[in-house]
Structures are given as C-alpha cells and as structure tokens.
Image (cartoon, rainbow, N blue to C red; front, top):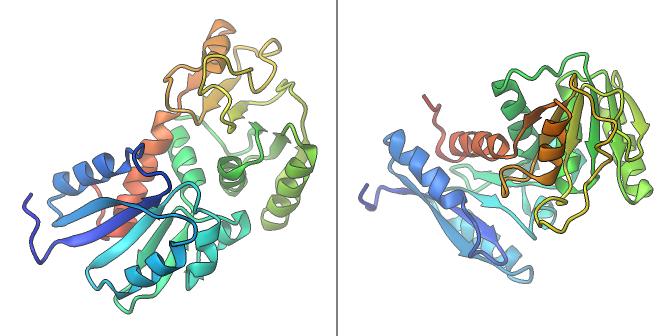
Length: 266
C-alpha cells in the first residue's frame, strides 16, 4: 500500500531495535484490513525517551506507539492516563494517542496470553494455576489469570520476595482468587505456566520440576523461539497438553492493531 500524506503512523520504540518482529506483524494486519497506516521502528535510548514521547504528542497523524525493552516501566510516568491493571503491574507496552495529543497506556502481555489460551479452548474459570516467574511478563499474566477467574494461583520465583510482592498486589486487585507462594513443584495445578526467560537457550535450566507433571495438566510457555522449549518437550513426554508461546504474540498483535488503528479485525 502506498504511503501518502493521509497515511496514519504508529511506532515501536526499543533499545536496541534491530531484533523487533512486531512491524511485520502489525503492517500485515493493516494491509489485510485495508487500513492506510504503517508501523515503523524507532530506536530510542532511555535518556532520550521523554524527548521522543513529547515529539510523539505533537505528531497529529500518529496513532500511538508500542513500547518494548527497556522502556515498559519508564513510559508509565510519561502517559496522561494508564489503564488500571497496567498501573498495578507497573508497566505499559502500547500507548494510544488521541486527537489532542493525550497518551493512554495499556499492558497487553497478560491479555494476549489469556486470549491464546482461550483460542486453544484451555479453561481458566475455577481452575488452579501455577506460574513460574515474577518479572514483567509474569506480572501481567498473573493479573490476567486472576481477572479471568482462576480460583487459585501459585507463584514461584527464584527470589521469593518478588513473588510475595506480586501476590500482594494481585490479591488486592482480585481478592476472590486464593494465592500461595510456590516451589519448583507444580503438582496439583490444572495449568502450569512458564513466564520466565528460561528456555530461550539450549543450555538453560528448566524453570520448574517436570518430574511430577501428569497427563491431566496443561503446560504453557511464553517463549516463542524455540517453538518447542525443553519444558514443553518434557511436558509432552509426561502426556501433558502443551501450549506454545506464539499465540500470545499473535493475540497481542491483534489487540495492538485494534488500539493503534481503531479497527475491528475480521
């Protein structure tokens, strides 16, 4: 599609920027929906972030921008409004600019993950969930799981204090769910989620103990490459249903396209 003076612009900001795959995904969706818009990568350092965001405010044909490492937390203070769960999580990964230059922040990591589970017909309501990790993605997923009706959420992290802090914040937002601090043992949970970076490299340790896994459990990843991590391979060998990381990205792209371009995808 030809870029003209009518083309609506959005951006993705990161440092570094060369590795991002989001522009390809978003632009393909814009093209498929016949939207006169384009997403471009913008390399922004932490020091330059406030100046770039102020520049974005002044761009009248800017729809908004996607935020990735290392800016997800810092961008929070630069938004005019932040969606409630993003405020609780303490991070934002997409910002919509309105016609007056006001910026509203959202965090879609958790929503994208849950949408992927729902697309695979993996139930959440009244289920028990085990979450490995307490970092940025894990924070968003914990809130999304509680929001979507899991009855018990166990959070395990190498640094227990981070898991305890996450439990404290999620329990205040969603008190109907029961919470507990976990170990490496995921026994007794319907859904087992790896929300750590362990599995990106072949030499990585497993994020949890796979020996107790049983065929009635579903094991889910947030890692997209490799498509089958060591955790998923071990879970398969135990007869578990497995859910890869790619659907999380695919569903985030759909949500981002809707926010940035104000369209409903077919």
